[in-house]
Amino acid sequence: MRPLWQTLLNLIQKKEKATLDCDECFELLEYLVEVSALTPAKMEKPEFIQLQDVARIHLNSCPHCREHHLHLLEEMEAQLSNEKRITNSED
Ligand SMILES: [Zn+2]
Image (cartoon, rainbow, N blue to C red; front, side, top):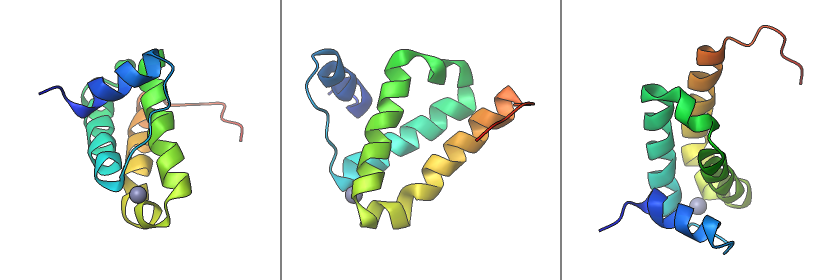
């Protein structure tokens, strides 16, 4: 069985719209948190940026996931900004 993120990447590459249900969103977020902790550089690859977008789109459109899983996205972003140590951040 292929991991979820690979299925999603496949959809993205075929220019098909990747949409998630709530379980998939959670699974993807957990995966992204893990990757951002272990290999932050990977997160800057275009395909991983797209995976983050897919997760964000679901979080933006799903109040349930916003409430329960937004912290995962924030965790991931915290990992990444720690890593980069942004000195000159603008909003
Ligand atoms: Zn959801």
